[in-house]
Image (cartoon, rainbow, N blue to C red; front, side, top):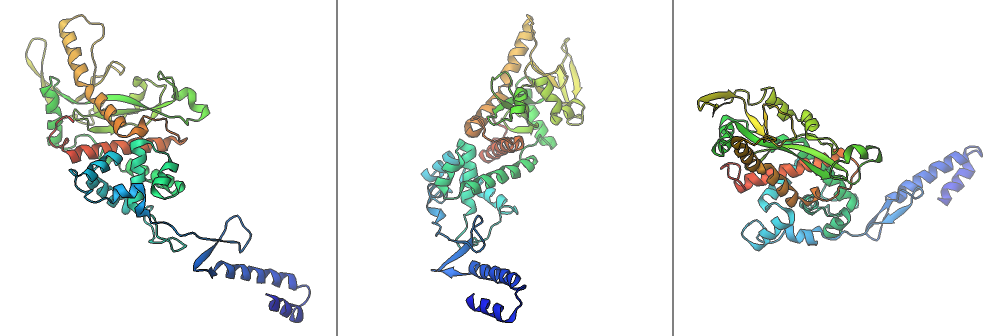
Length: 388
C-alpha cells in the first residue's frame, strides 16, 4: 500500500491523486475479503466498513440434536417398534409418510440447497427442516425452541415453515377433494343410505381458529360469539371424517349463512354443477318410492333452507320430525369429530396463532387438513369407508 502511494506521488499529478487513492483502497478492500486466516474464511460483515471481516465458527453436526435423534433413530421405519411409535407421537405421522413428504419437498425449487454454505460448512439436512415444520404443526412449538432442538436458526426454520405450508396449500386439491369417480360417489352415499339418509354425500359445518395477532383495524370483524378474534373455515366432510373441501377463511364475526355464500363446493351442489346427475330414491308421504336427482349435505340449523342443505326441523312436536331431528343430529357428528381430531392432532390450531398475515394462517389450516387426509389414506380409512 505504501509503495503504491509513493508511485502516485512521483508519476501522477496532484489533482489525480485523490481519485487514484480511492481506487487503491477499493482494491485493497477486495483483497481483504478473499483472505483466508487460520484455515477459516473471512467474510464481509454487513454492518461494518468496507473490508471489515468476521471469523466463521464451525457448525456442529445436525444429526446429533434431539430432533435428529428421533428422525434418524434405528428401526424408526417400523410402526411396531418403539422408535416408530415415538416418531408418530412426536410428528403425528408415521415415518413412511414422512419420507414421502420429504421427497415431495425435495423437488421444490425453494427447498433445493447446496451441500455446503458460503463458508464451506455442511448445510442443514432437509429431513431436519421438515421435522421442525411438522413439530410446529403438531404442538405449536415456538421457533426459538425448535432452533434449540434442531440446531438451525429460527429465521431459517420460520422461512422454511412458511414455504412448507404454502406448498401444501397451493396443492391442496391433490389430497383434499370430494368424490370424483362413480365408485367413490356410490361408496360415500351408500354409507349415508345405510344410516337412513339416502342422497346425502357429506356433512357441513364451520370451525373457528384463534388469531391472536389480528390487526387492530380488523378486530371488530374477527371477534364473534367466542369473545376473541378467530378465523372461520367452512368445511365439507365425509362420514369417515375425510375432508372434501375447505372454503376460504372468513371473519369470525360472520354467521354460517354469510360464510356459506363463499363456499364454492356448496354452491356447485346447489346449482347442480356438482353431483347434479346423481339419482337416489326415497319414500314419499304415501309410502311410494320417488326418485330424486342431485346430492345434498347435512348441516345444523344455522344455514340457509336450501334443498342441498338439510338440517333438523325447528319447533316441531311431530313424532316423525322428532325422529328425523334425532337421526340428523346423530349422523352429522362426523364433522364435529373431524374438527376435534384435527385440533387434537395438530395443536397449533387450538393455540392462539401469532402471525399477522391471514394468508399464512390459511396455508397453515390447509396443510393440517391435507395431512389429515394423508393419514386417513395411510391408515386405510378411505378405501374401506370405515369410520375412524
